[in-house]
Amino acid sequence: EVQPLPADWWQVFGDAELTALVEQAMQANQTLAQAEASYRAAEAQWRGSRSDYFPSLDLSVSQSRSGGDNTPLSERSAASLNLSWAPDVWGRVRRQVESQKASLQGSAADLAAVRLSIQLSVAQSYIRLRVLDLQRQILEETMATYDRSARLTNNQYKAGIVSRGDVIQAETQRQSLRADMIDLQNQRALEENTIAVLLGKAPVEFSLPPKQSLPDLPALPEVLPSTLIAKRPDVAFAERQLAAANAEIGVAQAAWLPSFSISASQGVQAASFSALLDTPTMVWSVGPSLAQTLFDGGSRRAAVAVAQAQYQQRLSAYRQAVLEGIAEVENALASIQLLGDKAEQQDKLLDLAEENERIIVNRYEAGMINFLEVATAQNLTLSARRAKLSNTAERLQAALQLAAVIGGPWDSAMPVSQSVSEAQTATAR
Image (cartoon, rainbow, N blue to C red):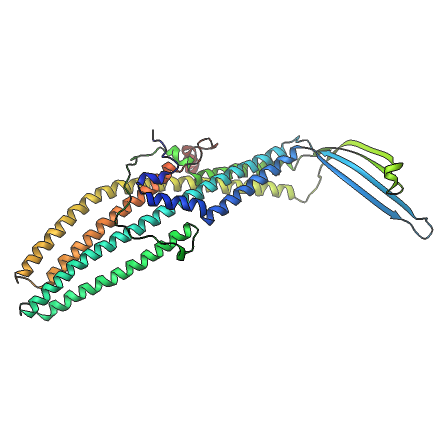
């Protein structure tokens, strides 16, 4: 059985700087702050829905003065306490609370999904930035090789061994590499700015010094149980939204039933406000009431139809979330496996390219070939080195996706009414 990674799943990549950046994002990211506020609002709404279980007590104080042309002026003051309670005979309040509770759980799952998304975004941007640092190192090392080739070509040109065309070609090669280095510098600046925003900072307040190393590639399982998908925060959010929609159908259907309430009041009346304290008249009332809507022009029928349609909409959204989650995991698993196989081929290709370059340079120094073959061999080596780095970066990004799934599931105590297999079966229907 595959065990989830710790909640701080990014630590399996063995990079202290990455860990520090993720922790900063968890403290200051503004998107996360919005999600936390939304969760607090959902929690308050759930508490508010539970208040309908209990009676309400109101205090009212009033004073009125009346009179007319042939009627003497009269005053009337009153104060009363009113107690009312609507027992949840038909389960309307229970279904409303059930809906709000599901919405609260959905908001908690959404908060977990936002948190996981930010963690993943920070890690992805950090790896892309470090890949750019290594690409810059490759270009600088290649530039040193190009510089040696240019000096050799110049010396041979002065000795009359090669033509002016070889000198121009060598310089063109160097100039092209300089342009590539400027592009990398621009890409790095953009990636650095992305990380700054994720950390809740202005880009001018943040910088990361270059580093010529990548996070470790962790050992991750080659297969994952499908039930793990149901614990993903985005899937749990969709499932809780579905549960809330189901409860709303019950709320809409309860509107067809009569409403029952019990009320009681006690108060005092007097001819003036001051008399309320001296010689008031005590009044009271108590009794139940039953109300039933006889005709509403189809309003309740429409409300039920809306609730049922919203349920179907969220059912489809839940099924889609499950399918997308499965596809994302399968993509990551396939990428890790295939990119691992590709890495072996990239190593062999790089060895061949470097050996070919050494042979070609030796032949050029001996005056056996022109510089075009040297340039072609050097470009092949550069391409092989960059392809190997790109493959490593892709493996790391796939590992990030998978580690986030294993390490970032929604709380296992979270009730999930429909398993992945059930969702797939329902989708197949």
